[in-house]
Image 1 (spheres, rainbow, N blue to C red):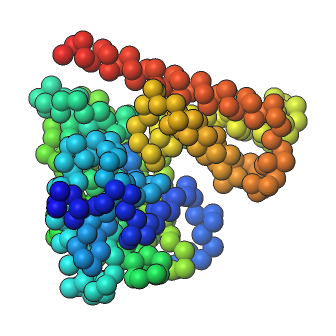
Image 2 (image 1 turned 60 degrees about the vertical axis):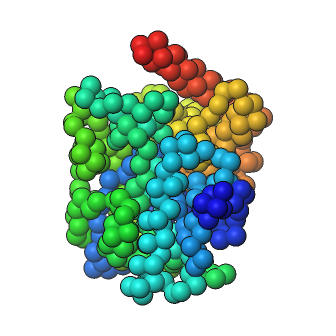
Image 3 (image 1 turned 90 degrees about the vertical axis):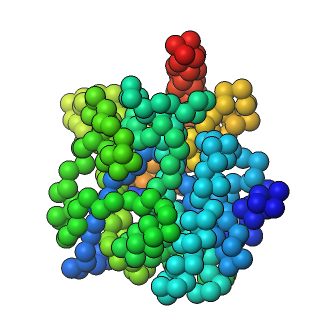
Length: 367
């Protein structure tokens, strides 16, 4: 009980919570790109956003993207797999190192942001972890759960977080015992943007695992400045098509958008086409990863994921420039289109959850 209390109290949010910012797909909204800055490329891992924070009293708090994790929440089995216990001491060490190196003051909260991955590795020489399900599917990293850091944030009392330069963050986290994102390329922004995004994930080899027979393609890359300190953070993600969150059902979509021969009959049809293209399994998985694996028997959770998915589609329509603003989108969305979006999202969720259930039944029968 004392150990549990030192890790985190149920519902505890005394450290405050900072949501990790969404990473854009391009530099178009970065008006002040630093001239001559050094950029780096890291692999974008396909998992669930996760963070570990430690305060001046040595208390450790865990969080998913949407908020702190209370003691009773076993997010992707990280508590039942005892990952919370294994991360406790590294969290304290990284804070002590950050203070010693001058990255943080004595009263600051230090937080490692990263990705929770693993849970399955389909290789005949690698034993599965009984009862553990993968955090995400499509690329495989490890049979057990792993936390891979990619950012170190320092939060002074009642102030916003300050992100640490990448190399200093990596050095501090690795010295404390965390796995941290590895640099794949380094140089100017044009050089880093030319870095390939289609490659086999490098993480299994880092973990000492044998290669899989298939390509085990990485989700993509993150391109970012090596140094922090600008008013806006400068980083972007680049994904391969297989992990894209927008899928057009027709190769003629570009002609439709520009008024070509097969153009949609009007703005309403074009908006419908763009909305339906964003109802994808990759988007559902990204939404689901913010709260944890969906239990089909939990109707409240199913309703929340449904609403979150529809909201994510609407936000994407604005972020991708289909609508000029959320207000303009709300005005353009007819009740008919809202109903169709609801049906499409329900159908997608039902299809994915049903397929998972069949796969799990099949796996149990094989065992």
